[in-house]
Image (cartoon, rainbow, N blue to C red):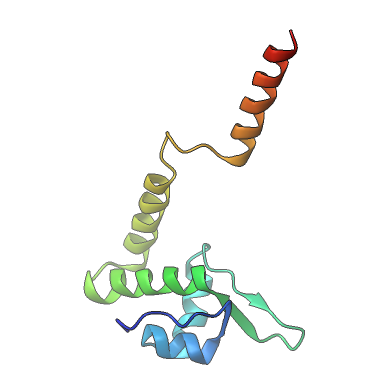
Length: 109
């Protein structure tokens, strides 16, 4: 679990289960409980997890197993962490675009 993630774009459910240290059915259950988890699916309906998904799963596992949070508590904590990561000083792409358009208009005048 503490080993670094392999340098891959996508992971199959079995690979993710080994990396996270849980059974595949646990991952499928967590998908139903945590809306942040939405792995892609192939035409054959196999789940493909992105690196970001695996990192979120590792955090969920830490919260549930190490920190002993409940499912609801872990959901709340993940929301807090995502809100904290979108700091007020960090601008979204749309905000940057709007700012640049406003500057362009000021320069045209």
